Length: 368
Ligand SMILES: Cc1cc2nc3c(=O)[nH]c(=O)nc-3n(C[C@H](O)[C@H](O)[C@H](O)COP(=O)(O)O)c2cc1C
Image (tube, rainbow, N blue to C red; front, side):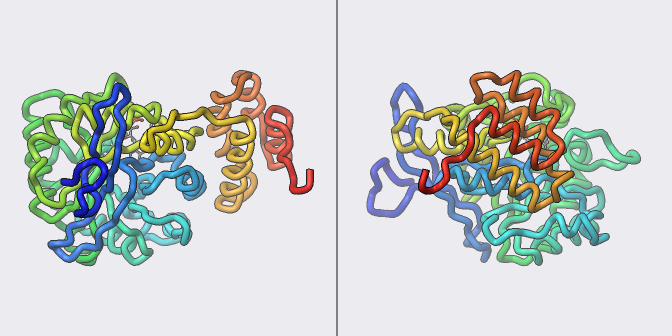
């Protein structure tokens, strides 16, 4: 591992945290991919990424995040059958050239189907294939998927094995897990059984959400549990460990790295309606104070996000979808309740533009 300031041996592969009162990353490069196994290595110049967020993290949100310094993004979990059956599910998975590097995340119940879905994502050009063993949504027809597979380690391992075999050798695979299905000793044992196989099968990394499946999104993400997992697996070569849970502001990224030792951090609810979290994280890395967005920056991002969403979904669905983003964006405004109420009633492009113009002002055009 390199030293702060560089040792002439290239970038360090893990975060180097300075001993200042605000944890400050001095130099970092995150790598994802096992070159020793012929995988392409994705290299990132910052230790964070935008998480999969079902119903939010579409290409519009991802592109806005990238323009604010987010170096990597994961799609929301896609169901294997939606890809296999073609149609809208497959169309939604197609990628914009600017939307790289990216992991396509898959969820399913049967090894053969999820492996077929993984192959489709590889053919569509995803840089990394990520398997979801974390989603706490109830079992469908008594069949485990997502986080519920953590309580069926044989099935989880069969899925991970089938996916790794189906995906071309050069494409890295990763897995998103919860720290356990619940707080029992058996659940913790199951986690480690699965995690050990993840490593043996040649997966390039994993992000662990520090809540249990039973916990869903309630209560804190248990960072000491992430620390224990990192300490157990830290010596595995070319294996990148990410942490998830309770990243609400940019400084939380560096606190998590410092407290848990994870290589990188997944930013989830904290970046909905807040792409500036990434700009602020970059500022912290550069030793600068993280600044809140100005009213002009808020307006520009609202217009950009809405425009990208319309391109992606069409005017009516985008207007509906953008309401929940508007509510989150309103938190940055000096009069959040009024802005929120106005966004809730916006039904089309004209409404959306009117709300923005009223509360955020008109964009300054060239020559003004
Ligand atoms: C609405 C919502 C949708 C989510 N969808 C996904 C998903 O599709 N894939 C995934 O890996 N995680 C998903 N997550 C989990 C987040 O990526 C993250 O692990 C979790 O929210 C904990 O991080 P946070 O406390 O910083 O938000 C979702 C979370 C929420 C709240």
